Image (tube, rainbow, N blue to C red; front, side, top):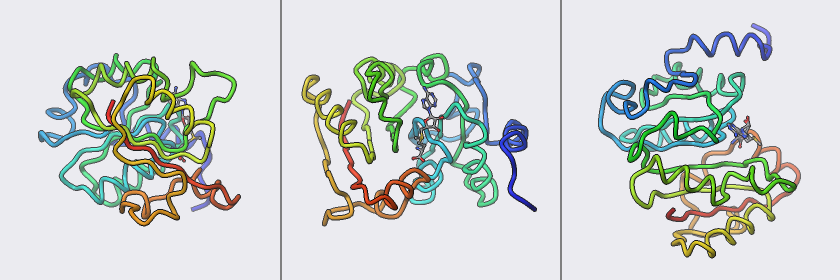
Length: 213
Ligand SMILES: C[S@@+](CC[C@H](N)C(=O)[O-])C[C@H]1O[C@@H](n2cnc3c(N)ncnc32)[C@H](O)[C@@H]1O
C-alpha cells in the first residue's frame, strides 16, 4: 500500500481502539477504564508520532503511557505501532495541552516527558516548560512529579533551566550533549523521535533535563 495521506490517517486514527479525542469523560478514570490496572501513568506532551510513548512502554511494561498531541495524523503512527505490537500499556489523546486539566484529574499522572517541543522563540507564553504550563502539570499529577525534557534548542534548554532556578526545583539529571555523556540512560540512547533524527542530521547537540516539578 502506498503512503497514506494526512486525511486518511486522520480518519483512521479516530477509529483506533487506543486513541481518544477530547475525552473529558475519562478524566480521573484512565487507570480504571482504559488501562484497567493501577500502574503509574506517564504523559508524553506534544508527542508527535509517539516514539517516546511507545518506546518507553516497551522498556517499562509495568507502567502506562499516554501520548498527547493536537495533530491526529501524527499520532496515527504511534497508535498503529502500539496496536500492531500489542502494547496494551499505551494510549493516545488528541487535545490541546493548554486544556489538559479538563482531561486529567488531580493525582492522575506520575511523570511527564516532552521531546523536541517547538522552541517558541518569540512567545514565552507558548513554551511548554513555562511556569503557567508547569502549574497545569502539577494540577493533574501526584506531588512533585518528574519532568523529562529532551531538546535540540539551546535557548529552550537554557530557558527551562532559568525556570528551574527561579522555582528552586530539584534537578535529577542535566546534560547539554547526551551522546557525549557516559551516564546516558537507556531511555535516551535507544529512542529517537522524528524531530530528533532531523536535528541530529544537521549536527545539533541534544540536551536533556530531568527534574522534579
Ligand atoms: C516539533 S514537534 C515534536 C514532536 C515529537 N515530540 C518529536 O520529537 O518528533 C511539536 C509537536 O507539538 C505539538 N503541539 C504543539 N503545541 C501543542 C499544544 N498546545 N497542544 C498539543 N500539541 C501541541 C505539535 O502538533 C507537534 O506534533
